[in-house]
Amino acid sequence: MRAIVFLLFLSSASGQSARRYAELRRVIDRNTGFAHATRGVNMYTLYALRGCVTEKDIPVLERLLSDKDRVTRMATADVLADLKPAGQDVLRAKLRATQDASERIMLQEALDDAQKPDYRPILQYPLNARERTGIRGCK
Image (cartoon, rainbow, N blue to C red):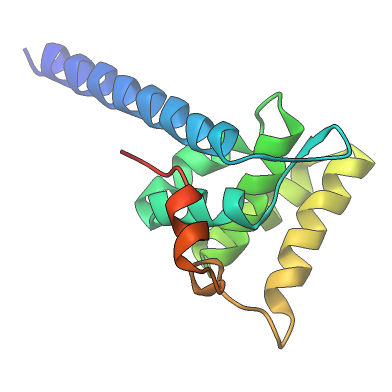
């Protein structure tokens, strides 16, 4: 009986995690910017994602760091760096395990930017009312 309850708990947690992963992916996709016909991370992407997560989302963010989409990985790295210190610990662990040079640079830049003396936490970005209404965050 305990085994059945445990398995039900695991499948429920896994389903919630998968839904949360998809939700955060949608937030990134809906707030991705375009410049010179290139898709990329901008202030709105980071603000929307950071506004949707707390430290309890770190396991899902850790999975997003391995997503196939580079923009998703970049946005996630910057948000994890903003979730000090637990998020930065995840970035350091991923950095140690990563062999790809471009991924290592991206992870290191996220960590380095968050350590700068003039670093401004993402949710403190100066946005006007029009900009705030254009951000499509979590439901």
